[in-house]
Amino acid sequence: MNRNKGKEAEQAAGRSLEFLVPRSALGWSWERARTGSAASARAFLRLCRRAALDLIFPPACLSCRAATDAPDSLCPSCWGQARFIERPYCERLGTPFAVDLGAEGLLSPEAVADPPVYGRARAVARFEDGPIRRLVHRLKYNDRLELARPLGAWMARAGTEILAEADLLVPIPLHRRRLFLRGFNQANALAQGVSAASGVPVDPFVLARVKATPSQVGLSRTQRAINLQGAFRVPAERMARVEGRSIILVDDVLTSGATVNAASRALLRAGARQVDVLVFARVV
Ligand SMILES: [Zn+2]
Image (tube, rainbow, N blue to C red; front, side, top):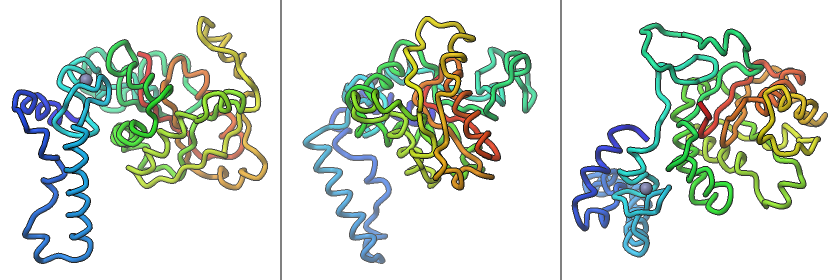
């Protein structure tokens, strides 16, 4: 998700057969293999497997499935359309500022007027039509196994600062009825991806969704908050995992903030020292 990768992707797009050489080849050398060990032999085998897989299934854009030069990336077109969130942004809400005011630690007027329950929120990109919405949709409805790891790695990069202080990742839970219907929780899949990239452990059982909330679409801010009152609870047997801990709530999309505020309140009531939020995309 860094800009260099995008440029590389653009440069490579015009070259044929380039995609046959996996990017992982760069990390391996004969020099290291000669001096090396079992670990190096394993790395070589991994490389061979990757190369074989790339021949059978050439790497495709995570969002639109067009051919790309590297696995787990976006094609130049999707890259150009996605709007990643970078500084300057509001230190609490993580919402980007239209102009760079040149000062560190700025807060948006919204964060001052109506401070969130959580401490800080961070997101990879803006949630809007195009490649980002498509990624969220694919994750939710079919391709979680393929997407959770790369998207989780992008999230780990966007949340570097808050992850450095975190003890635990907690995915926003689904009510068990919805979990049953969908078969999995996309927030948990992303949290596992963030964990793989950052080393911060996940506990999907710290928060329970005790109230089935109807769809939030079309509700006002206040209605959403009322809708979610008492929706989350920390089960008695999990209290010890929360007390005094710094926790990051993980979700796919941050919309009004009503859901993460309700979940943060439940964690803080259970004794969490700090609650931050990490999402893949957010409405700006
Ligand atoms: Zn694409």
